[in-house]
Image 1: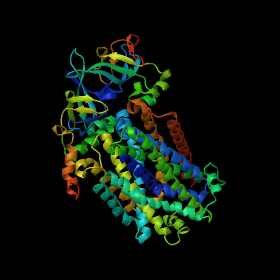
Image 2: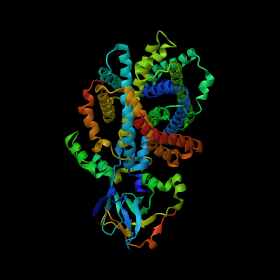
Image 3: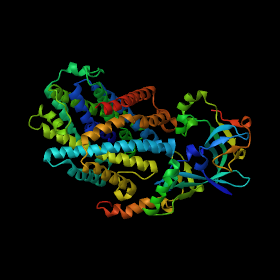
Image 4: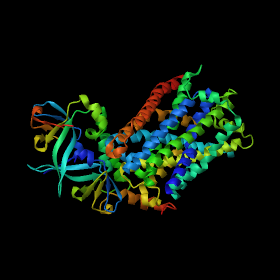
Length: 103
Length: 404
Length: 119
């Protein structure tokens, strides 16, 4: 049973199983249960300067207008992410097989 | 009924609370050096301030949180600490200048040097915060600050050529000394639009428990307060132009500035000036000390309120106590308050984007403001004025340092 | 729900409605072969220092060890105490059941109440 502080992995550069650069780990999707809060997936994305600064990127309408050209973020399932080295997360699948986030 | 009283007090606060050492110094220097040619800069600053205050109030009324809360919630501690450090450092300089302003006023009356008054003035400000509540801190200095209406009366007595005054509302370049002209324009903007005012205004709105029903009142308070208060600054500029520019006098020192009021009011003019500055600077000092404490406290999640006894918000009370104490140190070291003011105003202008950009992002976020996010006018006006201020600062400050 | 957007840096309100502080850090648990979960919220100056920059950690830790209440460095709150989530996180425990207000109490006793009029 391992514990990890969020700040160790937040903002870390994520690569896929082939070593291709995917972006940074910027957000974690979770679900509130009765006793605990389980993690469903990690959001990995390329972020511009404005986005680095705003943690609500995905809901901000201003960002949507600016976002037209940027590639869409990846949604990596909890069982698709290897966090044994927290500073260098790796996905277990190549990027072509990873789900993309739709706005 | 309560709303009407709040409306009246809000406007009074705007009128009596607008002038302080920054706005007075820059207006006097502008009038003396360039007659009416910098009135447009004052008007630009007033408009921007009005919009920013309205937005702060609207944010607090709809989200029930202060702008500082919104900043940390939305941007995370990393970015928040950058904004906080930048704004707090610059506004701390302004605090030193305000305490210096009160000390200057007392020195004029007593002849005893400024360094002696740093501690007593800071102590008085501290005592009022310690013993008083938010209403006292906001309202008392503002009501006393109505003494600044004498500047308007002075203008009325001296009967300027109003046609010439109105021409000053449109930018026009002076024949000579252009770097100084732009530097003063930048300083005027920095004196009018200080980010801490936004934070203080929204903290006040939350302390008064504003809700959506206050949005209309908020608009009036912000607009009328900024407008009437700002017009007093214009009055100072006009007076200075009539008294100093006409006689080609260069105004560097405070006692010179005070003599400006001697012309319309030969017997009481100097006393009026000193009193006006003393009262308004004291009010501003209290406001800034609170603002910085709100910034730190709300950012770290403390209970921050001026309502209870100090022991009920120990960290918050400690913060403003320490801040006021630290601000006396430069005064004791005999720093010239006018010089500090000039630097602080220019720095404020240069760092405006640091505070305004995240604030604008917040104001457009419907998660906080629901149906009350900014319209295109609010966004455009603030962005344009902020850019003007930043560009002017980037250009004129180096020029002033290397030229003057 | 999203952890960075909805939990991190949010204000914590205790069961009596008082402000307790903000979520400065979050602890995740990775059990063998089961879904990872969010287990604890943390508050503390050292955590904030680390988020700003590593160079700040040692000075802040030193300060905490020598000045003030000198309590355990960080305050931990189990996730199960989160009652409601809104703009702020509302907990089902009292602030005094944790060390969250250690500095507040220490300053109140040792500094503020010693000044006349402090209350």
